[in-house]
Structures are given as C-alpha cells and as structure tokens.
Image 1 (cartoon, rainbow, N blue to C red):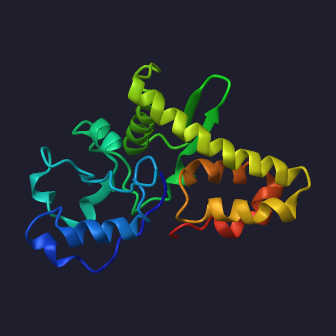
Image 2 (image 1 turned 30 degrees about the vertical axis):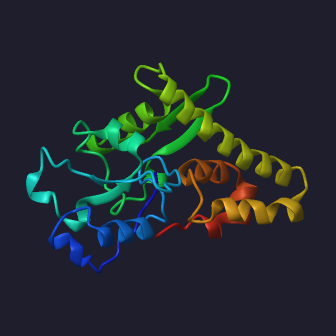
Amino acid sequence: MIRIKKSLEIPLGLDTKYNAEDVCKQILEDQYEKCYLCERYLGTDYQVDHLRSQANYPLLVKEWSNLFIACSYCNGKKGVSFDGILNPCLHNIEEIIEHSVLFMEKKVVFNSSQLSKEVRQTIQLLTILFNGKNGLRTCREQRFYDEFIRKINVFQYAVDEYMLGKKEEYRPMIEELLDIHGEYLGFKHLIICGNPVLKKDFEEFLGWNK
C-alpha cells in the first residue's frame, strides 16, 4: 500500500453515480490500474471502494476524495469493518508502515513506530489480506499469498544478483520493477531502503507520487 495522487478534475459522471464509467476510468488511471490496498494489477477485476463505507458514511457515497479502486478480494475483506484506515492520498504509507516478508515462516509482517488508531487499523487490514484471519489462510487467501510471493521472489532475486556484482545486467530489471506501475511497491521500498547500497543506487525510483 503506497501513496496515491487523485486527479483534481472530478469526473462528470460522479453527479449521477459513484461507479460511473468515467469515474472508474479516472481512478484506474490515478492508481496506475492497481488495487489501492494490495497493489496488484487489476485488469478487469476491479470495484469502486469507499474508503469510509457507504453504510457508515452515507454522505460520502459520491465524495470524490472517498473513492478508490480495489480488487474484489480486498474490497470484500475490507467491507464496513475498516473505516478508519489511513487515507493513501494524505499519507506516505510505504514510509509509515514497513512491509516485510518472513519467507521461512510464510508470513507477511507490517510494523510501524506510529501507534495512531488509523495506523493500527491499516496494519490490521493488511495483515488479514496477506495472512488470513489469525494466521490461517483459506484456499483463496493462500492463492493470493502464493501469487504475491512469486512476484516478490522475482524482485528479490534481481536485487540479490545485482548485489553479487551483476549490476549492468540486473539494473534495468530492478528499475522496471520499481516503476510506479509495478506491483507491491510497499514491499520493494523496504527491500531497497534496508540496504545502503541499494538505497543510494535506486533512491530516485522511490519517490512515488510525492
């Protein structure tokens, strides 16, 4: 989950309904066609999500700043139970919350030095998305995790090869995977920032939407 910039121009269709065609197209463009929660590429699997839910905040149903695009998996998990998560338009979430993977334990960990209610609820939601409830994954949750691990492993392999001296060969690949269109940038951010050499060499690629 990372920082997002929303267009300042509000789609005209929002006057009619929150999921009008031009609304969806603009949000998809703003989010580089990725789910704002898990950062997966969406394709045709997208839904307009209300950061503050329709049920609990009826006055914000057609509020432009309250609308984001999410995959059906994340939107279903969020529901009406996580109305207090961080707004990705207002916070550099990839800097507030550390996204990391414990490969041996097959677990994703989210940590933060900040203990606000918003941060804690965001961590709770992200933990459920990647680990399931109480660390037990259903079939769907396991498939979600397996897909995530495959893609993170590709990035980690490129980084490892780069650090082993194959810089010219793997730099273009790392740059491409760090592009704003790339998936799971919150996790890649921590990998890069956790190594002084990588941070120095790729710092220019970490300024997503600042």
